[in-house]
Length: 125
Image (cartoon, rainbow, N blue to C red; front, side, top):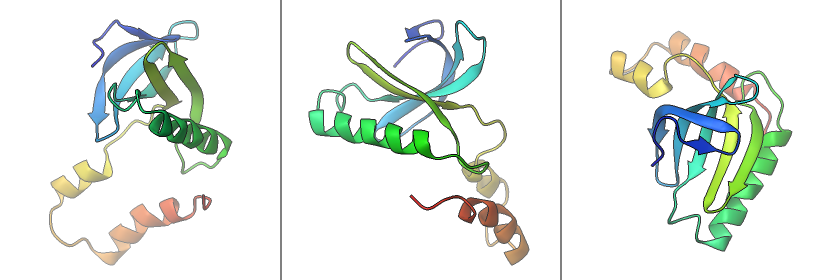
């Protein structure tokens, strides 16, 4: 895992935003522009697998081409030594998981629609 102050390409790590089975997502600042981004870094053990790396590259290419207000924009791709990362716009606000944790149980249909309709408005892959 990267620590605050470490660098990935032109991005300086600030903090961890989340992690999963394939990657860790960091809050980072572009050192030249001063802009904040989310940087999704493929886990080191997966970065050794050529098939996984190619799938990650394909994800980067596909997401980079998508343009829609309800889709997080991929803005850059970094491959340096043993680090492979997607750079995305940083989205502020609570996650769906946090909202669900705050309101456990069934949600009224109107609330579900308010969350899901913008998601469904995004382009199909």
